[in-house]
Image (tube, rainbow, N blue to C red):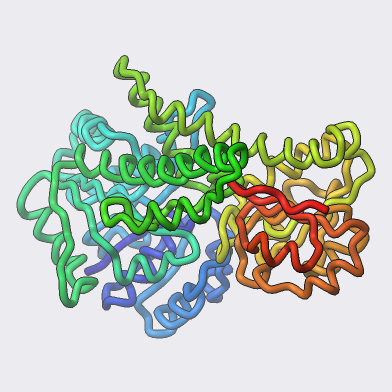
Length: 438
C-alpha cells in the first residue's frame, strides 16, 4: 500500500519505517523543515535502538521518503496515519489541536480516503472527528482508531513484533484493508483485535493507566517496607511468582515519568471528570506518584540534616532519561530532583549516556554536564541514581570511593544489593529497603 504518515516523532517515525520494512511505500510528512532535512540524510532526531539502521535501509531501497509538503502525496495515498502529539492541557485533558489540524489538511486534499488516528486520543474522539468531517461534507473519508503500544527503548521491536494490534473501524471494507495492512507482522499467531473506535480508544488508556497503577502500587508498598524493615525486592519477587499477577511492571522506583503514563493518567481522569464520574484509583495513582518523588528528595534532606544543609553540596546525578535506552526526559523524576536540589542551592553535575543535551537544554548553565559517571562523581557529596542504564550496574566502586567527598548513594532504581554496599562500606539509600549506614 501507499501510506502517508503525518508526524515524525517516536510513533510516526517508527511506524513509518516498520511499514516500509514490510514492503509498503511510505511518505512521512512533518512541518519541521530541519527535522525533515536530517531524516532525508538518514539522521535520526532522537535515540531509539535499531531505528537508524531501519530508516537508512528503507530510504536506500526507495520505500521510505520524507517531506514537508502534504500535497506531494495526495495522488498516491491509500491510507493516512495521524501520528501527532496530544499533550496535556492545563486542566489535564488531552490537547487535540494538532489532530484536528491534520484532519483539516487531509480534508482539503481529498474527498475519499482512510484516515487512521494513531495518536493517543480520549474515548469519543473518533465520533467527534466523524461529526466534524460530516459537517464539511466529507462523509467518504473513513476514520479508524488504531492506538500505538510502543515502548521507548524497544519501539522497533514492539512495532515489528507486536503483542497485539487494536483496530477500531466502522465498515467491513475499511476493516479488511486495515487487517491486510497489519497481517504481515504476524507470521505465526495473529493477534489483531477488531472493535469499535470507542473500544479501541479506551483500550489504549485503560492499558497505560493499569500499568502505571501497578508501578505506583509497588511504590506505595515500598514506603511501608522502609518503615517496617521489609525488603520490597523480596516482596516484589514473591508477588510476581503468582501467575495471576506476574512480574511485569512491579519494579519500584523514584516515580513514573515519560511521554505516556503521566499524560494518559491525567487525560483519563479528565474524561471521568467530564462525565461526572469519580476516578478514585486514577486520582490516587497521580498523587502517590507525586508523593514518591517528594519522598526521595526528603531522604536526601534528612540525611544531611535538613534542606538548608544542602546548600553548596555537590550531587552527581546518574541518568536523566525517564528510562534506559532513550534520550526522552519528559516528566522524568530526575528533573524534579534536580530542580529541588537547585532550589536548595546545591551544585548539580549530570551524566546520562544519551539525554545529556536534552537535560542541558532544560537547565542551561545551572547544571554541569559530565562526560562519564566518574567525572560526574568527582568530589561529590552524594550520587543520585535516577535511570537504570546498564553501564551504571557495575561501576568501579573503589574508584568512586577514592574520588568522592563522601561515599554516599541515593539509588532510585535499586541497582545494587544492600549486602554489596555493606561490604564496600558505602552509605546507601534505595527504594523500599532499609538504608546502609555506618
